[in-house]
Image 1 (cartoon, rainbow, N blue to C red):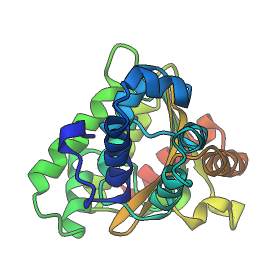
Image 2: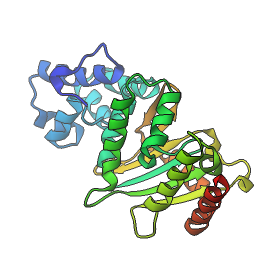
Image 3: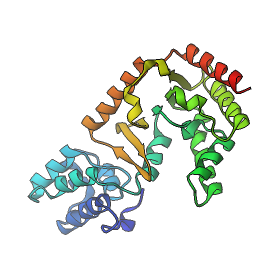
Length: 271
């Protein structure tokens, strides 16, 4: 997330939106306080919008377009920015993840990065032909520090059964990874782990991995993963669909204790 002076309107539609917010305001010789009154937010929010530390929502920009008579310029930029792929989405999602007080994570294919051991993570990165594995591992384990802080977020994880019995990196690496899952999800800790068994058949999680990050003051923000990048979902209606999807997947999942027993059985089968 940048500062206003580093915003490049040619980089993405989000950059263009932030750039024009500042440019239009300065052209009208208005302060961030004055624009905040128009948008219905604090002056610090306007500064954050212009620096891309936060993103305005539909109501904010509707008020601005109406007052400045832009012909819907800012709302139009927001609409297309939300539809477009942004190469900075993964980096921005890390910004929200680090601030979240609750995370809901579903993964149908691999152990989520927040819960990976070093050997498991290295295997995944090597398979993805990562350019700098050491640097990527450093980022991954820096992310995991949120689980060790004084007030860690509540983390609710749903895994498809295929995640725990697919051997990534060989028996030893997988056994250590499963042991780590059992340790990190012990009762009383910040992580709740549940598994959706194969007996559930088709379920709504099989369409792909996603995460819901609950932050203050933004509320729920969703991130959905895909090959070659992911997508942030910031609009309320879009995020609610992911919340519903997570709840429906959870309805098919085993209990916490039954999930732990399943992981133990898989570890025994690995030998």
